[in-house]
Image 1 (cartoon, rainbow, N blue to C red):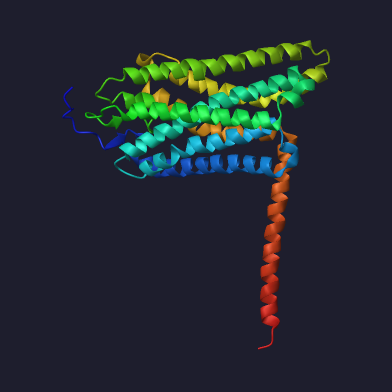
Image 2: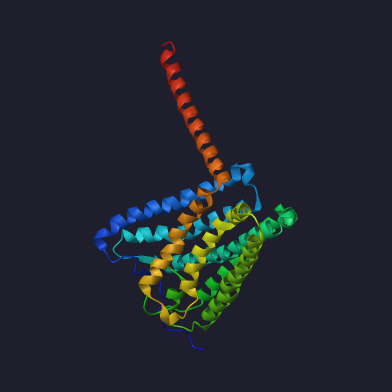
Length: 331
């Protein structure tokens, strides 16, 4: 084959999220506050789980992993998007775009599998409570987490590498506010057949496979809860998985709308709104969902608050005493 004479694209132009140039500063402030909420909220969840011994259980171990992924997902998209909001020309380098594809694909793939494992954890806790200690040991949980991260890394590396082999020689306007696989593939001037095959395989094994496993887990959970005779017992059993079920619903509703549909049905404006859901709204809601109705996490938050309060008061007191000693010292 003859080598291609096309000039390789070195940067892409982002269409951006909004077409209101006069309101870019307002949108920047809004997204900065929301991004700060994502980082602070999920970081607080991680710190609470690490510092509070009652939270050293399999479910909270996986919640800490989920919080890490939420920070990763938002951080791979929002800082660059906010920077472009303040610039007239919204660009991203080719290498930066590929890095964004890698990070976003990595966080999305791992979250799919992690939510499935969390569903299995709830299945064991409700359907086989007497065997929970043996089936969800510390060693098994760590092995599951390592396996999930390893599969996610492999999936992301493969999709990024086959993206790097493509030629981008014509238009460089990405019809999105970040580098996601479908809008970037639309700009390639070479065959994207292998990329489409990999996307279909990912949809089948990662998206649909994990969705089916999660559905099966919750089917058994619901059947078990319905067999409980007392209404108080049913309520207690359902409360142990209601938060996770809500998180699963939010995540899969956006994923199914974005990926499990024909390419011809893509709508730019709707896709941007859905992308905001899983890059910003869901990472904000996840720590709220897991903390608002959870007594243990509330106690951990209170413990962190008291530690910070006393450490701050102690520091101020030390400064005050040091100044007093200096003033009282003989000249």
